[in-house]
Every structure is written in C-alpha cells, then in structure tokens.
Image (tube, rainbow, N blue to C red; front, side, top):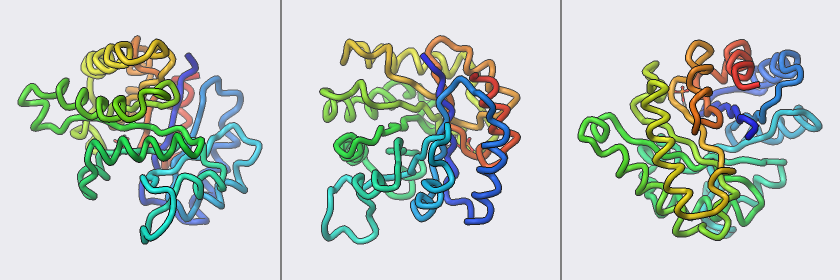
Length: 246
Ligand code: PEP
C-alpha cells in the first residue's frame, strides 16, 4: 500500500509561518509517491484550503466533535471541517486523551462522527511509559482500538490507525523499529479479526519520527507510514521523511 506521511502541527503556526512552510513543502515535494497530509489548528483550515487546492497535500484537522450540531460551545463538527476540504482528522491523540480526559468511548464516537461526515479519522492509540514498564502495552492499545471497532465495525476499513507510544511523543525517544513493529503486528491481528479489509487499513507510527530514523521504521512490515509532530514544522525535516516513504 502507498505509504502515508501525515504532519501534526499541534497548536503551532501563524498565517505567515504556515504560508512559508507550505511554500517550501510545495517546492520540495516533486513527485512523492506517498499520501501526504498536514493536520492544522482549526482556524487555519481556510488558509490551507486556499493554499493547497489542487495540490498533492491533503488537509487534516486535529480534532472533531462527537456531536453533529447544537449547543456545544467551542466544538467543531465534521460537517464544518468538510466545508474546508478536510480529508483526515486526528481522533484520540494522546494529548487530547491526557489533557482533555477523552475516553476510549468518546474517541470511538468522534471516529464515528468523522466517518459520517465523509472524513477519514486517524485513530491514535498508544501506551504511557508506566504502562509499558508494567507490561500493559498490548492490553492498552487493544482496549483503545476495541472501542473504535465496536462502534465503527461496519466501516472500519475507512479508518487510518496510528500507533503513538506516549513516551515517544515530543520526547526525542523513538520506539525501536522492532518495538514499533511488534505493536503494529498486534493491531493488525486485531483488525484482521474484525474485518476482511484489515490489510488495507494503514497503520502509521508516531513518536519522534525524524529524517534519521524514518527509513528503518517505514521498512517494517506493518508500518504503513508516519504521523510526524515536531519534525513536520520544519520543511527540510518533513521532506526528508517523505523522501524515505516515496
Ligand atoms: C504527534 O504529535 O503525533 C507526534 C508524533 O509528535 P512528535 O513527532 O513530535 O513526537
């Protein structure tokens, strides 16, 4: 399957910085043979829509409401995201699970809301360092994915999954290719048990992916791409990762 390299800008950027970064990406991309997306803060989606129209970079958002509309102050619905050309939305990023107390059930409902709006949810799962050290990695990621499978079984083949060990996000610590592949294989097996389309569901790795470690991670059998945080804010770094995937 075509590799996917998705950038997660988190709460970074400005109109000027985004324009400069996207200019460099557009100049540097050439004919990359992979699917590329950038997940931007919601206020910048209109800017991305105008700067990326007709381009090979898809627009992503970082969160979506589980609700369709109504009295939910501060929330942004899937239909609203769709109006700005959003193709992908992160759901259950560990920073949202951690700082906004998002439960497995809420993440599953957000995935459902995205799918209902024609947006592909990028479902993030991953264990904390304490959970890894307690030998709970497999149980944690299986539980997180299970909630999404139970609620979205009928259209599971439409999701993208991202394994992001929490201890590797923004820390400079990366899972070794073997550690990442082991968890990806667990997730693939769980998908296989749930749908005949499991082989077509991309499973991305995220957690301090950079130009130096991307090639080896992306060479693993069940690693179908990368979700890139910090390195997606620097055009040269992001392009170097894309080059490893192309
Ligand atoms: C992320 O935020 O999804 C992420 C993987 O961040 P970083 O690459 O900075 O670890």
